[in-house]
Image 1 (spheres, rainbow, N blue to C red):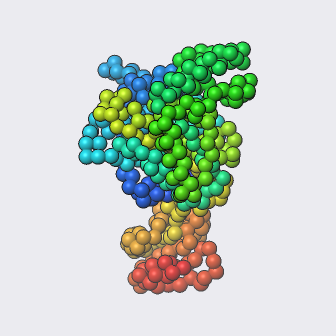
Image 2 (image 1 turned 120 degrees about the vertical axis):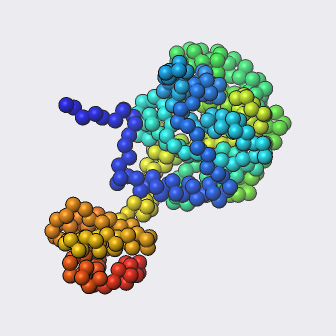
Image 3 (image 1 turned 90 degrees about the vertical axis):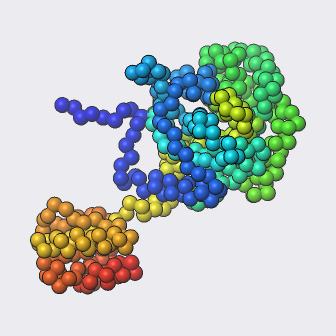
Length: 419
């Protein structure tokens, strides 16, 4: 019988790989906490209309990529393809903004039926942060400054910030009309997908990766020229705040993002070290989404970062993976009386905060010591019947030439901590 394999594009993360994940997760939580963001957790499955309304029906995500099914009650449900819609749904349902604006973050797996490739999987993981109820560019800048701090904490460089403003709805409508006219004048350069979307959502054409459309996209009018006074002032204030904080950025007038709910500020953090999958974090302002999903009107801004892509950068950079899974002590034992002492010693080591494996399955001391060495532990704690009778343990350094000693468990703990 053939063994069952994981679903294509939904990958296992094996123990040797998880230290980089844990290092990233710990750093993100710590940085978010510094800025007052609190954790919120939403379901993996939401009603399908939530994403159709929030993301936009004429998008690749809704049209092609969602994992949607009908449950036993006949309801259409979808595995979440992104986090913002669920966070906003939760904020409305539980009236989170009743006592004022909220800073929240969430994390976990998302699902999109895309072509699997390096840095892009069908089950992928994100950290997502949302500032709900904040209207000003100061919070836009705060999120970008927070992310700059995160890259520094992770020891990553070569990550560039691109920003743009896509204005408000009326400004985008004016720009939309001009964009349609531009592309109609160059209809021969449009591929089938672009021609289909031209009158539904022409801004999406600016995201096209078709090399044949590069020139016509490059000569398209700039959305920045359609901004009204308020949107322009918001964008200029954001830039001033970034300069004040010494966060480098470039204005990318073609940056529009792929979701319908954005307005005004949009941004991406990009790198040239991951090939085609160069965006590792992206987001923007979505002042109309809360009302669009049935809540009381309130402004908001948020972003999502791709865990898999950042882990690839950490691996490339040789960043310290952290020690969350590393073994410090391996306890070997042989003999009936020694087993009870070894179990107590292992618990004492753990009580002292030392990551400890207690050997299981029996075997000679020589075989157990091979296991201890292979575990990566810095020390072996050895218990035989002689040690057990004396109320002591042996301590052997596995990574240097220190002499083996026999001592009490309390002194063993002090020695291991010191070493």
